[in-house]
Image (spheres, rainbow, N blue to C red):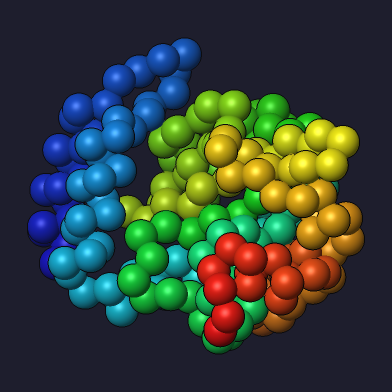
Length: 187
């Protein structure tokens, strides 16, 4: 498995372009990563994904960056107490004011084995051990909040609580149950 991983990701890294000393993945690279994990030993990725979330939690705590579980990562941890084995990435959210602060942590992230593979006004993606986390950049408006074309009523992100997953207390929206019903339907 390691040989195949090295081959695939060497191919990705060889195709990437450099911009201001950043190495970014193309859309095809994200697709290759998604397809690889779809067709291979998904259970092997769960410990990597958990460790990635824990490492990111530690560095964000250390630098006082508030974040919360987002998307299908929130959905599965909240509803089932585990990560979705079929998910190709993990998702967390931050508010826009934290974006530049996260980018300034590149050296600290690199020391932990992470590489920033995407950075735009909606998202920063970091990858470690061939698994990546999307850090969704939430923008506030008067009644709405969200990133990219994913917009939600602001009421779902007014307050937060903690959920324990794998010994770490992660922030989640206080009204996660209602938010997840809107986004993913009933359990």
